Length: 387
Length: 64
Image (cartoon, rainbow over all chains, first blue to last red; front, side, top):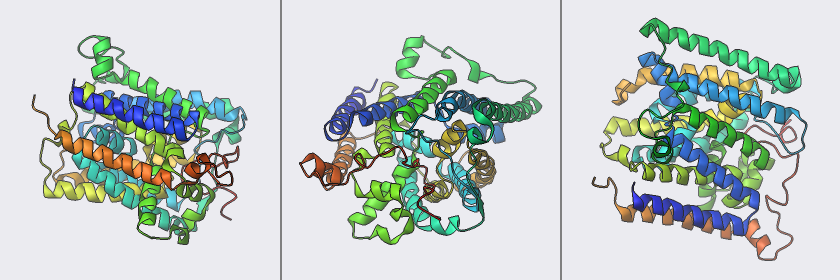
């Protein structure tokens, strides 16, 4: 265990949690704690969407992909009934289906493979001290702000209204549609793996850690996928219940970038996106009352704590970053940010929360981001990134 | 095992983030409200059941 990093992460949690408690509202402290738990789960579970997709394409191994599908299925079963209950104050991640979504998710998928992480992946690896991912995050924020400025233009292009499966086919129907869809994707993943290897790895179904006791794995990692799936599914559901909307990550990146521009004198109200109710309200107020920001702070500290407990903080930065790898982080970050804004979120806000909200746009996002990811995987060797 | 980082850099980075958060917060309506300005329009006192999800999609009422 790295006592210094663990101590620093715990001090950070107490200071920031205390500040949120004193200055805002108790529900935000709860969301901060949920963010911490999600950060620990993402790090200890090594739950990377990007690597899961890449392993399917390059190594023909589907365990990571199936773990994601299990996560989506479980969370759909938890969240769709809540959203369909008509309880006031709960809104799902439902967005329009159009040019903006298609282009945005494709660009995001491409950026994932070049930047080395998705929305959650970028954040938890930065929390774990990965310097290359810090570059990706910085350009993720820049790309997100540029995307927010361009978004109204993209929204004027052809588009369909949001489609909520809960409204269209009811709660049981929405869960059934999501499960059948996810099951079909799982069958395709299995087919790809069986064709290449003759059998399935099935590590996503393991309940016990590969080595050591369950307690040691719980504290120091690595968690079996199932543990991470449970924490992520319950965490997203609690986020919906406590915060009123499902888990998202990238809106905070827009906000941080816009606040930075505002601090140097740029009038953000000249851009339409920043005049809409929610962004304008968030921009005018403290980051400590912005749910996405507070959860991201928690996630960063949770990942830092987990990396400290595993004695692997900053471990990924031991290798020096080459010129082209640095360029990949810059380009990937910009594409991630721009794509996330056009696609109404990242793999968390649009894909995970979108599917769990019974929104059709999440399926379009999934398909287009996967195609973008295929292009990104092809480009990785040029950037000296291993496949 | 030798640490892969310098402690001072990690502390400096975390302190810088804390300073930025505090600077942002101290100039916010929420802080003004907490200091007794009852007219400050904060995110928390404008929060209602019709708030849109923070996915970046425009609220139905915002855009034609």
